Amino acid sequence: MKLLVTGGAGYIGSVVAAQLVEAGHQVTVLDDLSTGHADAVPPGARFVEGSITDALGVLPGMDGVLHFAAKSLVGESVEKPGLYWAHNLGGTLALLDAMRTAGVGRIVFSSTAATYGEPERSPVLETDPTRPTNPYGASKLAVDTALTTFAGLYGLAAVSLRYFNVGGAYTAKDGQVYRERHAVETHLIPNVLAVALGGRDALSVFGTDYPTPDGTCVRDYIHVADLARAHLLAMEACSPGEHKIYNLGNGTGFSVQEVLSVCREVTGHEIPAVVRERRPGDPAVLVASSEKIQSELGWKPEHPSVREVVADAWSVLPR
Ligand code: UDP
Image (cartoon, rainbow, N blue to C red):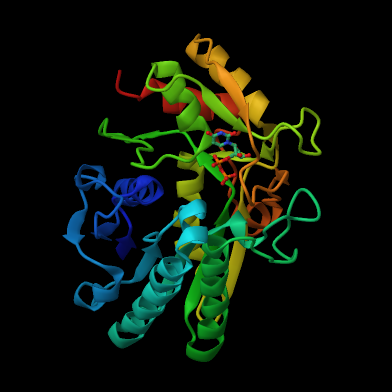
């Protein structure tokens, strides 16, 4: 297929682009490089530097779009909600409009567990209430809602994948390494590994008074290679007039303390940690039920252990 990957110079988008190239698809990456890296675009893909609001220039002739380009910092979204509504919702509406003009009818969208907010139960099912607690999650949920209406009205074939916590790295068959390297790093595993490398003095553990077994937040960590593979299945499963929504996680929760212990074992470093205040808006427990994508699309994680997620991230970090 001829496929457009928006945000394909970012962490998850670049892994998906690499897997698409490996599977024999013709891939064009559209990325404005606001947070991505040009050298993360796979060698076999065509790269166009630009905004999703200018997608019409590259869409004609495409069979589908995998849409990752977005603002994704929860804290920033609370400080600048307008930015998130403009980029994540406004930008995607412009992309959908351009897709209609160009006659491109398939989209796989990068949604998030943040659409659920503070879930009432664990694991979270796709049918559970969506009550985002920040503008980032709200803007992603708004896109999910738009996709449902566009599928019904215009026959769009859409799939939303709601990611839980993504980690690890991907090494392609040609040896190219794709890894997480955000200028502003908020995620737990890269922050722990930065301490192990000596780039930071200590890990800040945000809250030890949650209603969880050890008091720290529990999350479901999925390997980026497994997450990416689900996008290829989703693109094949797109069906005109339907919007399918799938959670993506491993179905097992690990606390911040447990992740820290795994990181200490994997790296052999002591990794000092200090307890800090809770981070506003962090739910206590966020674990996915991925039963639906497993039964409907046949997706199955190949790297379900958090140890492998950590080990793969650690092994490719430049020293
Ligand atoms: N966390 C932490 N210290 C950090 C980064 C994250 O204690 O430096 C905690 C955070 O409060 C949350 C969990 O680790 O409970 C996962 O956070 P992350 O930002 O990786 O993902 P999120 O679940 O927010 O999407």
